[in-house]
Length: 356
Image (cartoon, rainbow, N blue to C red; front, top):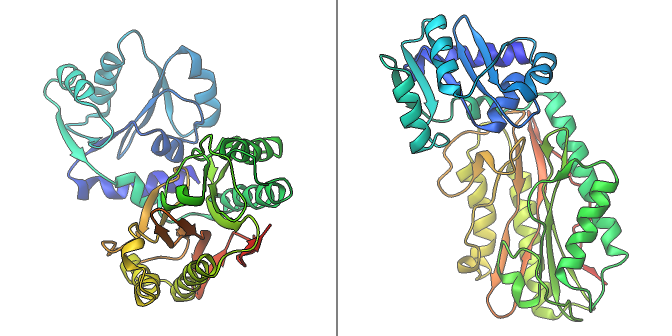
């Protein structure tokens, strides 16, 4: 698996105008090396693959990254980097322009005198967009933990609980049942707070008659799940149900339209048209979805600007929403795998409006 990823990365070096790449983004480092620790950088050229880390992780890196020459750095990692770049004969070293800080760039520039530092973007990320079956299986298991957590919280959620209490129940359940952690801060937004798409759980108490938006995901073997469900505490009002039904129709329309060769822009438009035709276009202000994997937000995107074509093996969220300030919000989100003839939906929780 790592060998194939190295081959794919090396194939991209020349088109990026470099003969070596310095990888510092944690997700990219894990993807390319298999190393699950928290410290280290990778240098890859056509003929060499180095993993530089400190004393704490040498043994772990040696076990987890057998395709790499593991090098322990001293007080200054830049000095070790200079030795490695010289040894590998790298004249143009790419670096991740959206990860390396100004201070780090200064340090590398000083240490690598005579080596051209070339800013690059998306080299590893674009390889990561298409998941293999091992990755998809990990994401599926992460999403299954989310589905189970949703079933659990339906049994206990009630008026008078705070949003934080609901969020903690979700997190506790996922961790207790095998999650390594949570993919992002659990969103629980009730009543008027539901109009905030990223309304992270607060001390507000849930009240009867409110809609409650819950957005969460587990981490399993480094990979993330992501799902959103909106429920009603008590019988939903006609307007609440109207908005819910529009969002559900928009989501189902988009799900039916996903297939290889279509762009994220085209899929976004399918859902957006349903919401716009219903008179709520201005209340859907974010993109329809995003890729999920080692990071909770990655390529590809389903949005008005996403021109990249979808490919089999891509994993994306489909999450339209309507947010009415001063009233409520509704979002419904599934996590799906793009396949040759459509999609495989990894989210199994019911999407009918649940009235508790």
